[in-house]
Image 1 (cartoon, rainbow over the protein chains, first blue to last red):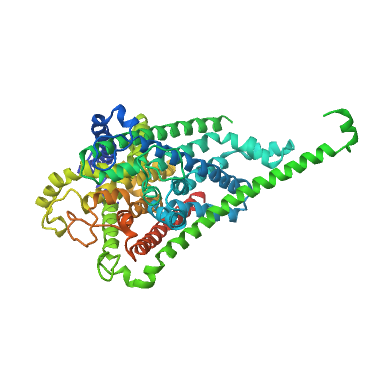
Image 2: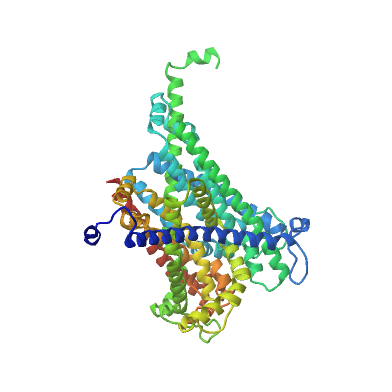
Length: 296
Length: 326
């Protein structure tokens, strides 16, 4: 500081100013490069998946089940259907429970209890998915054997904090004047919540649910404990273990067979397409929801 | 409703019947939502209990020395299990990934909050968020089939020729191993930490930044003098959140790390982590007497680590928010 003042820098760039500007420029360029490198990694990954999956894409892929060991050919129909079943059942469990928790925290709970519930959800969110998998194994699989329902439950535990936290955030945005107006009209509390408060937050809840579905669709760790002993048939019955796209990718990636690798890439393309589409949808819903709330 | 029936009812009957229904409705909504919340709290307790219950045979048999015993041998007589090589693998891969990811995440956060022009900002931000959405099993597939061959053929020879005097860059080149695991974890941490960093940097009041510019500081000097000190706690939390992800990642790591329960100094060599060992060994564990409970023991260690990291990140964020509120 004293050095600069004693030297009385003029308007022209002296050596010291030039050095400061150079350092600044270098850091700016480095930050820009880092960002584009991250985007580059995404492009590289999606690009690899597309390039490697394209030769494997065929009608048979979607209409045939996986071949039994030793046979060639086969598709991944059972894995696709299995994933749909697992994620649909998981969402059907996690969505109502998650929204109910959010309703309790924002409409009924005292501040202290609200903190307890919120902390519990944050902790749950921080538990590694492999630990949730082995927990569900110890809780249910040991007693009831593997089945798709248990796998869905494990996925639902992963979705729960995501859905509930995002629902809480939008519920808190609902202006209290809306609730008060409803109370003033003599509308009972439960109808205020169900018919006034929740409808205004549908966009936000849908965003959270969509992101949670995207996350659950790609989860592998809970599935390896709960739904691996499947037969290579397509089934909608959640009482038996089912194959799923993430598990198929995981299993095939560890095999040396190039045909299985191709199937894994094809599954990866489907999964990445689904996950990126749902994330984009969620962003769109979020923007629309935010705009709606602002209009109020 | 027909007239005679209405005549027979007292004047306020309809009123009271409705309020009766509403009381049930209120009670039902309250009961259901409270039960759901109670379920979430109980679930945590149940989770901790079940993990330790599952681990109990191994905790009883191997005791605390399990933590510093290195050998993992299902086929030994007797079976011997120890977590040291896995704790080492988790620590070294997470630490290296953090060292790589932390400066990059901060740089990306700064670019997205301070540097990027309006249109680019949204697009780049969205793309980096997409990176966070890619399932770990696909990152692992890419890691083993695309990144792995590159690491073996190019990256490891390159590192070996320039930094080969370091013991960590010596030895034979492999497609799998600690190095690809570190890279995969870095890729998984960056989108999480950089998104949090961006949000933090956006909370810095504009007048502070303008004041710094008014004093003639360059942008970097403003970042060092204003933004980073202002958000220091939050940045630590952002990096801790990334660490939480790195510690617990099982699938992508088990796909690339080679799954050898040994302590190798060289990063070119194979290794294993707590999480990836559970994912890798689980399928065959039930043939052995102690292996299932040994895997639960690992899950218990992992749970404790992950909870410490995540809870401290949250405490820091809470404190940061309090400071903001003041």
